[in-house]
Image 1 (tube, rainbow, N blue to C red):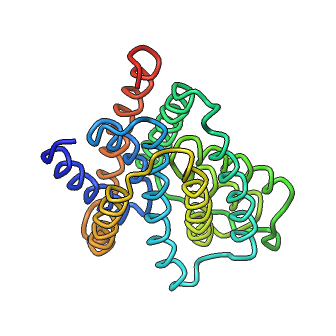
Image 2: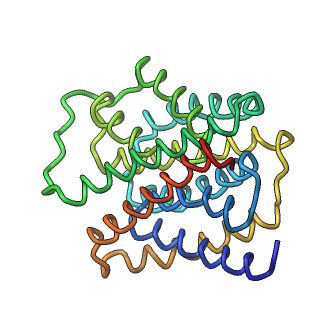
Length: 258
């Protein structure tokens, strides 16, 4: 690895953190492409190390929601525990999953997240429906938690755009608390998935710690800039960037190798 690549990658890591701070999530989806194509890490270790970035970024966001009291532990904690178990054991058997499958899944995930982000940036904000019942953890949510944990471990991204609607419409959690609870869940399952990869794949600890460190600093700066920067344009530009990166990853995985 050359020094210019290291410096460029660390700068990108800071940018990932800024986006996370500005949007409250999503920026960590860039970690896999950065590890792959800037730091030249092999696909499976890149996915594993990305989980460390996902867990850190979600934890930074979770702390802010915790201070504001917008985390539903009654639903978020059991969801997170089930997802943790799924993420850990999926990571332990990930060596049996072909790299092309993991990268293709990541590409599909990136496309879906980008399209949802674009749609959200153009629609007129509406009030979320008030929960009609007491918020509670159900068997249906447990099944979704298993799927979310497995997906997180396989692709190295959090899946908040799947978790938040489930908490709102299936568990009756108000939207702000659903976002905060989602960050708790992602913190738990991403960290567990990363732990599952330890011993399975080579982890460059110096790279992981330096990248997550600068991303954390960027996230703090982004949080301070949050009210001064128009989020609509950021979402649109970021979504287009994810579409391009997701398409590139799928094409490379299917036709050019990782």
